[in-house]
Amino acid sequence: MDVLTMRDGWQLRTMRWPGSSEGAILFINGRGDFIEKYAETLHDWQDQGFAVATFDWRGQGASGRLGKTPGHGHVEDFAVLKDDLAEIFEWFHASLPGPYFAVAHSMGGHLLLRHLAEQPDAVARAVLLAPMIGVIASPFGPKIAGWLARFMVAIGRGQEWVFGAGPYGHDAEKRRALLTSDPGRYADERWWVAQNPALAIGGVTWGWLKAALASVARLRPVRTPLLVLMAEHEALVDNAATRRMFRQAETVQDAAHEILRERHHIRTRVVKRLKAYLLS
Image 1 (cartoon, helix red, strand yellow):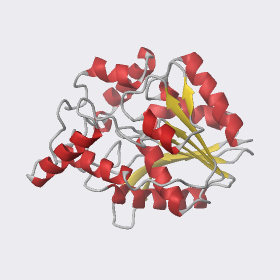
Image 2: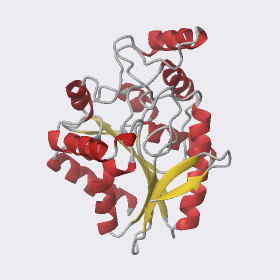
Image 3: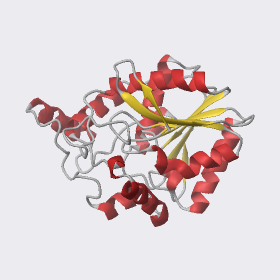
Image 4: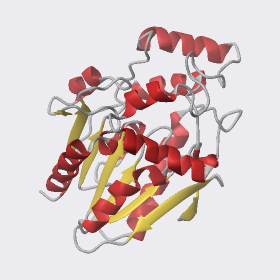
């Protein structure tokens, strides 16, 4: 583990492992994630010969918090996360030998797309897993949810949880069903949080939702070669929006949102697909 200081002084927790001859993967996790949650996959890639780097986003994991309490998943503008990712790429390129690849999950995939729109040669190839091209925003849908988010921010409630959200552990079984059908891998996340409660973060705020929807509106196609994988049982991000942007997107059968934390037979198939694509 190491700490990388951003230009504004904010410190992000990072981690990197050397590889052999296959190149280097930057893994970009999603909203609410932390490095340890993907330890299984990070070690798999290193065993396959890749060097690996990853980090905790500003405002989550062990990279501090932006909300009014440590449990509020808040950000005012995705621009700050986009800027952080640009600095992360500078560190990645300086730290490890190429060729360079990126694998990005959910919000991470969204922000990787924004970065690649400006820096298409940052990686030779990239994989997007359940990317946040659009949000379902149940039960209202993105249009009404967007109006509500803007209204709540305007009346000073931008740092409050969205309806139905709460602290970490709130409605845990419903959350598990949204993320993975593998109770063991879901329990693994909770084990890490039990070891270090500071890793826990709850649901998103109205400010986060407003910022996310504004950032979605800025997404553009990129020329970097991409493999895009969607979860068949997706309930958080909008697969229809992903399909509109990426006609070649593939559906991972039987998977929920966290594709790399699914049951063994699903996850094994995906890990093999990723390696084959990155080295093709």
